[in-house]
Length: 55
Image (cartoon, rainbow, N blue to C red):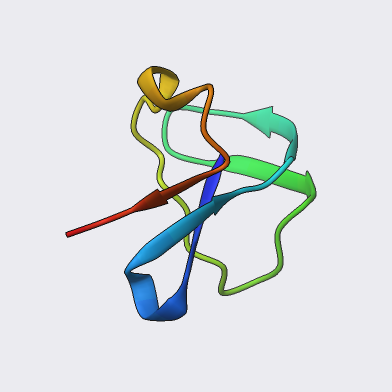
């Protein structure tokens, strides 16, 4: 999963452990703190990258 940093202009790959999920919620067990922002869309095209810069 990619987490935003640097004011939302860059993301860094983080390892996240997910718990139970439903259609509109998912429990985060490890890897994120409250308030962290992540990309929820499919990022599989960037699997070989550790960070993404957004324009």
